[in-house]
Length: 83
Image (tube, rainbow, N blue to C red; front, side, top):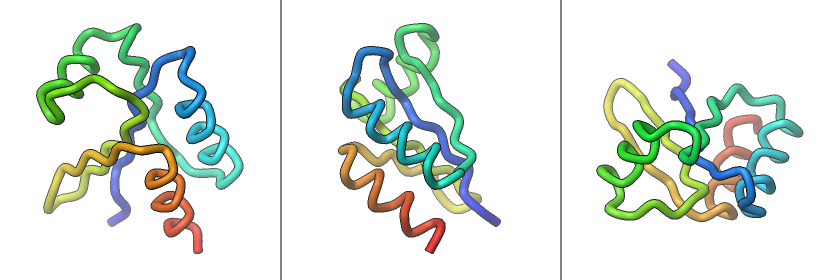
């Protein structure tokens, strides 16, 4: 089963746009969660990482719920999904 992906972002974050552009270029299905627009998403991010910096990719599988920060790491991971 493929992991469920959610990207936590803010509208003015350049690093977030970089990751979202990669998602679009790769044709991946990733839920975009704007932490400014949804307080629950912001709380989930804070509770998981004890900080609210973005972008963060949430990777959910049957075995684990993993939170990946850092735009370059996220893009590197996303590229492994299509190769």
